[in-house]
Amino acid sequence: MTSDNQVIIPSLLSLKFHTSFFPRLLWFKLSPKPEEKPRTSFNSNLELMVVFFVSLLFLVTGTAMVLGKNFLLGSPLAILGLAGTAYILFSSWAAQRGTKPTYDNFLIWIFFFLAFLGLTVGLFFTSVNHYSHLIVLSVGVLGLLVGYFVGIFGGLYLQSLGWVSGLLNGLAGPAIIGLIIVDMLFLVAS
Image 1: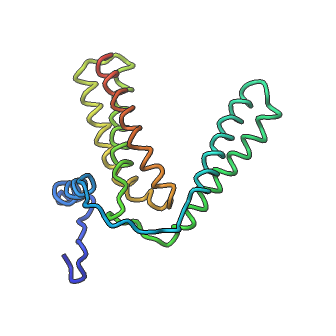
Image 2: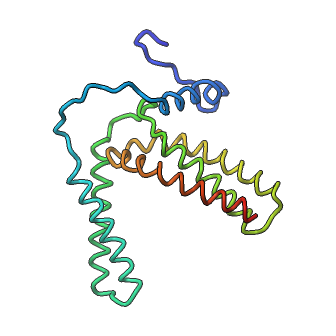
Image 3: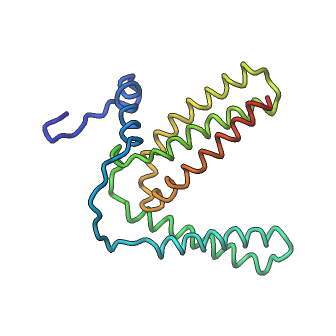
């Protein structure tokens, strides 16, 4: 602790970061917090969220139509969806510009999603080639290690996406369940 009650964060490449600081951070983020007194807030992103999901719907529908037989109708929908999605991402990023990401706001579910994604990629590339179980598991662990480091950077630096990072963090939780199921299937099939 320093004089202004700030925790001194060890270097990412140090052993102390991975054995002391980061496990405590994960434990703190996963442990239940006492309920706070509800506050009234007039800061709402509901309209941005509606625009974001409508834009994604236009993008997906338009792309499917372009790949199908309705090129003339699908092209404007896809362009409109892409423009809306890009606008939302850019405006959310621009609102956070100048704010330094901190471990206090670490996106824990994005970290776990990227770690499990590394495991899944490792298992996928070895199990589709029908390697032995030992090779599948060792490459899976290697993928988990790569995902661990990418997850630390993702959990820290995706905060710069503003309110979209909270949305992605919330969606990463259920996506982890899907990755775990896929990982189990890869392990059984190998």
